[in-house]
Amino acid sequence: MFRFAARLQSVSFATALAVLVVCAPAEAVTFNVTKPNDSADGSCDADCSLREAVIAANAAGGADTVLLPAGAYDLTIADASAGIDEDAGATGDLDIAPGGLTLQGAGAVATSIDAKTLGNRIVHVLGYYSDSPIAIRGVTLEGGDSSAQGGSAEGGSSVRVDDSFPGLVVTLDDVVVDKSGAGASAVRSVATLVVTDCTFSGNAAGSATSNWGLGELREVLRDLLMREYVPLTVQLPYNQLQLLSLGLGEGEVTETEYQADHVQARVRVAPRLVERYRPYVIAESDR
Image (cartoon, rainbow, N blue to C red; front, side):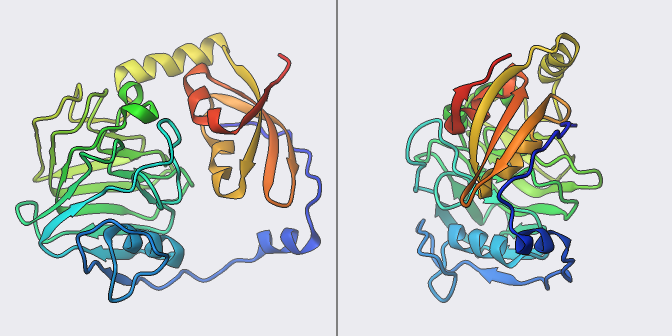
C-alpha cells in the first residue's frame, strides 16, 4: 500500500467537512440504451447510446443496470491521441466508476459491442477501491485492443479491472470475447473474477484471462524486492486521484499539495507503472 506522507495545503474548511459526510447509498437505476451509434452528448434519455448510459450510471452511483437490447453496438469515439487513456468514459473505452454496475445484453448471440475501430479495450473498471459488484452478461465483446494504452504488456485487451478492493467480484456470464488484440490476456483482473458460460475465440492475446499472471507477478516482486522506484512530480486533476493509490504497495507518495483544480504530488513508483502517470508528469524528482 502506498505510504502517505501528505502535506495538505489550500484545502478549504468546507472541503474538509465534505470528507466527513456519510451519504446513504444511491438507489439502483436502469438505463436503457436506445441506439447503436456511439455518442456522448451528456444525457441518457429517449436518445441514449451505450456510452451515454454508462456515463449516466457512473454519475448516478448505486448498483445500476445498463440494458442493451439485441443489436450491434460499435464504439467509435477514440481518445484524443494514442497512449492517453481518458478515464471519464467520454472517449475510448467504457470506464466504470465505483458504485456497482451490470451491463446486461439480450444474450451473447444477440447483442454485441464492437471496438475494432476504437483502438482501445472495451471495458475498464477503474481503481477506486469499491466492493460494489460489476457484471457483464449476455453480450459479445469484439475487437478490443489496448496496445496503445500499454495493455499489450499488462493484459486486458478487452476488459481490464484495476480495482482490487477486498470483496469486489467481477462476473462475466454468457459472454463471448472475440478477436481481441495482442496482449498478455483478453480479460485482466486484480479482483475476484467469476467466468461462467463464456467463450473466448479468435483472440490474439496470450491467454483468455489473467488475475495477475505469473509474468506480471514476477515484475511486481522484482520491483518490491529491488525497490527500483522512479521518482516523479505529477499534477493530477481531481478525476484522476485514483492514481495516488495505484500500485498496491509498489511505491509511495511523499508530498501532496492541493490546488483549485488539481493535486501536485511527488511520488515514487515502480518502473512498470510509470506510463500510467506519464500524461501528468511535470518533472523528474530528485532521488
